[in-house]
Image (cartoon, rainbow over all chains, first blue to last red; front, side, top):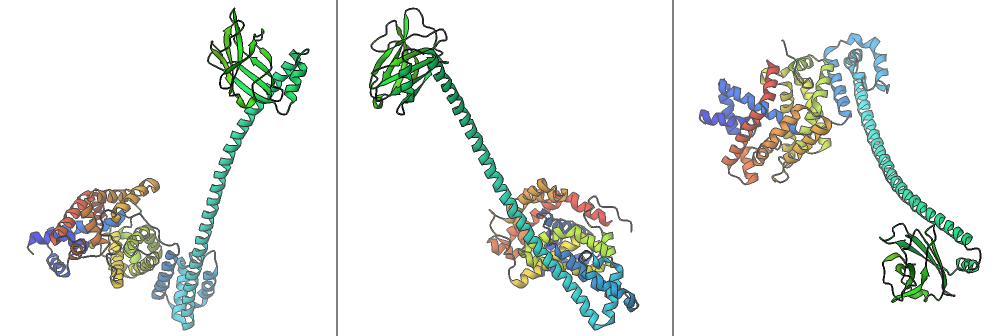
Length: 326
Length: 202
């Protein structure tokens, strides 16, 4: 390789990706102390050793550190201490490794290190003791690690359960709120109707009261709800039909006042509209009517109220003010 | 020796390794704290197995403890020394197992770098990872995928450029060029980082 080729090989050399023969050649050149190549190599080596920083940092298993520290603690003690430390230090050394509270840091005690060193130089039995303590530490770390893993997965399980329960609780709450709302609506409607019935009964003390009572009391009586059209948005009406006798009762509220020469007419719509009768409204804008000879209930599709010339018409000709079905 | 305090105190300096070389266990513990997450990620990436990686990492640290006095400031920062040591032990391991380069996919679509960079940028947001991680992740992300792939096959797969050429069925010259261009770009975009590293040493 000429110098240019050598220079070009430096980045590959720094990555350790050159073939052995080329690597030897580059190495030999660097050994000559070429300042340019040495400087370049340092840059590429610096760059290469940065690469692992792109990896997501990954904490090693928790017990690894204590295993490593235990191991080096044994070595350094054996290398640096004198046997003289043995007599006084020994009991302390025996106590430490088995104390669960201090087991994580027992290796960092210089006195203990000295003691262990003493033991190591002292007798063969003590050497086994040292291995025992390291093994015990290792085993207990592994045990703790296992327990921790178990505890963690248990916590994860519990968290999942709590989350699920919170979800179903939230769902139940939503449903409950919806039900309460629906109930409220029904309740309000019921109250309104009870009130209407009371008004009806109170306002017709004479003739018809028995009829109305009969119609309302009959278990076969059907009811229809009529709503105001755009002509009378606030208006509403109720129709009670007793199918056996084909009688019924009509009650309307909030209808606009009648223009002169006009009347409201109630229709039962089967395959065509059939007039039930005409009615006026009182000052409270209420209208009432007893109904007779109503068509068979199975054929009734709808009820409607239209505004018609006084006296009514055989077929509806004016605007529809109320409409509804059973 | 007067050593300037590194900007990022979580990066071990030569003074720390000097203390380790004298048998200072506290210094060694600190060294472990500052480097183990990176080294574990590195050996995990190379050997691809947690138990194996943990065992290997233990060997690496014990070797670092024994050989701390061999560390030469002239040859790089303590982190570079540890990365080199961990990488070469991990590559030894996969060579022994005959699984060299298997953890590094040859497909560009799902080249680990893409995932890793993404993971890393998540980490940047979620865990406020260091500026260093963000910079390296970005620098790798900006490389053309074929250059990044070749560099990763070399660095994490331990493959020679001839083996990479074979693996990717690409001419040898092309592979050399990809690695060279990619490394030049990385060197330039990571200049601030390795210059800081070199400053630590002076």
